Each structure stands twice: as structure tokens, then as C-alpha cells.
Length: 195
Image (cartoon, one colour):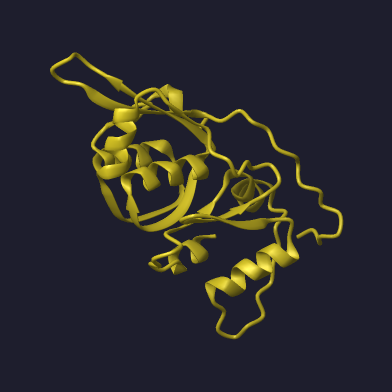
């Protein structure tokens, strides 16, 4: 996974390569993914083809993200918008030129998001509320602030709530991340070699 993330290069159509939590669990925790690339000079595409043809991992494009996932992952984000004005602000502002996160926790991700979108990103860094978040594995180039928030939600299996807090003179956009409790299907291992 680290080699694939580092190999991902800027592209105007595909802005991020995201390993979703079901895929990272299979790679890092269960070690049930075993794919072989036989090309002498393999490309990132060769690695994706090997993973999707030789294992139970899948690939999908959700513009502008390329997702690698297992049946346990949901490809639909849960986003609650309590303030349309805050959402409009998030969609207009912020730019994240580069993000490389290989199995990184919330305490690494949160300050990057906060700086990019110039909003309060919750839970706060070092908070117990993030202890049950999945670790993030993604490579991204030239994401807007809103795209960065979505990419992190895919990588961390979290849902997003956008709201506005603060007193009248100093309203502040808040983006709250919470664990996404939807459970998918445990991958079926029949037909795939075990490592």
C-alpha cells in the first residue's frame, strides 16, 4: 500500500487514491490480501489490476476519488448539512496541494484539514472522541477544501456534519466527524488464495 500511495501522481480527473478501512484491515490487520505483479516495470495500474483480479478487493471511481475497498466498506458518504451558508463557504475556499497519509491517525489529519478549510474541525486533536476512528491511508493532489473533507471521510469511515457555531458577530463554520457505524458484509474468501 505504501508503494502505491507514493506512486500516485497528480491528475486533473483522479485527484486522490484512497484505501478504505475494509481494504486497509485486509492488508494490515488480517493479511488476507496476496497479489503478485509480474511486470518487470509495473505501474500503479498494474498494481490495481493485480489487487482487484487476484483478491477480493474492489476498485471504484467516485469523482474525483479512486477508491480501493472491500465489501465491508460503504461507497456512499453520510453528510448532514445544518448550515447551507457554511457548506457554501467550504465549497468555495481552501486548497490542499498535497496529502500523503499512510496509516495515519486523526491527530495527523485534523490540523491539515483545519488549516486547509479554515474552520473548526471536530473532534479536536488529541481528543478521546477520535480514538475509534480508522487510520487514514490516502494520497491526494490539488484537492479543494470540500474534496479534502470528503476524502478523509472515505479513508476514515466517518460521517460529516456541517454547521455554524458562535455568537452573531463571530460565526464560525464547524465540520464534525463521527464514526460511521454502518456495517458491510464480511468478504467471502472462496476462490482466492490465502497468503
